[in-house]
Picture (cartoon, rainbow, N blue to C red):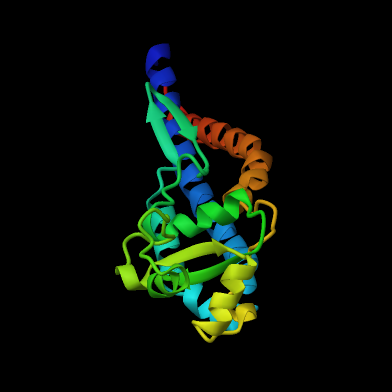
Length: 216
């Protein structure tokens, strides 16, 4: 005779294991989808102007850092025998340090801005960027990037002091609505979650039936 409690516990254990396996695969798919959006929405746009694209480096170190943090993100949380699958958001995903610039893009940018480094900032305003918040605080001060809003004063400084073409310094995401690539995989998860759960239960029942087949 098989104890009902034993079967129930086995069912829970098997279902939990199967669901964890399914969600692990789901997290890998989410990362894949977000990184595709990263290339389509961020890299391609930033490289429209090669000068600015080179400075922003969205296809180099920043991309590597973004992917690294995404891979370390805790998608699956287990609490009190409950399993939760969470998506990275502006609140839960680490956008500090060299990824601060993405917070500006994800939230949207109103107005036209230029991208300058610490030395250029000082040349434009004749002072160090003491109160200005850099987009990459972990970089050496002279290499830190800043967004400064377009104005007649700034335009003249860029042309006459920096001796640069203002068009080659425009932040490519100026005057754009929010581009939150972290949301890009949300529809995929919502669409497939019911199927994952149903499949998990079905697979668990089959495995349990096979395990206890012929047992009395």
